[in-house]
Length: 265
Image (cartoon, rainbow, N blue to C red; front, side, top):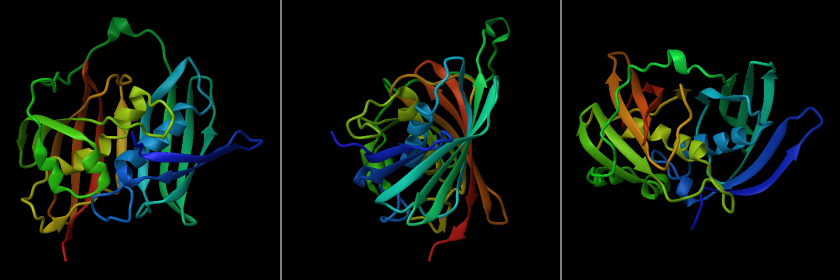
């Protein structure tokens, strides 16, 4: 079965910085432009690099902050990953995605020490009805592009600007390599911006996101990603898409996306 990306090669320099070259497939194709990659699988491939970068058994990723500096071209690109703040209990990792000589995405990730905090564990985000009995939501197909066509969407409840949608994909992130649950689910989070738009199709305003912020109080598991999402538009051309992130065991974190609102030509 096809994957979102093909590995070309990987190199580690004397400082420990890792640069990996990939080629995107049609499954990574974006929704706003047929010649770009969708930010969802782009996030997934960055997370695939993070997943294997100097792993430590006493630490895990708690936050990933991705800034989208421009269109992410389809085709060949590289990801360079390095530690910019080493430490025994916390470390900050930077990932730079480049294509055609330009930086497309810069991600900064906090990896944090883990310890047993069961005595004080407590959540405010509630469980959401799971995907098992939810009807398939074919409305997501109104978005074009190979990425959207690659995922399955289910939903119990969806309204203008608010709803819960469950997603899964049968495709691996990298051809010929197993995909961890973390990478698989992170590779769908950015879809949140398109599942409860505050407009009817066809849209009169575009609302692309300029970033993706992901915070996790635990690592996700399983094949299903639940997005409990609210989309809000301000009156000065800026909007916000906010989501509680769920897996089959319940909420595991949150995501935020800042939007630039622009009239469609």
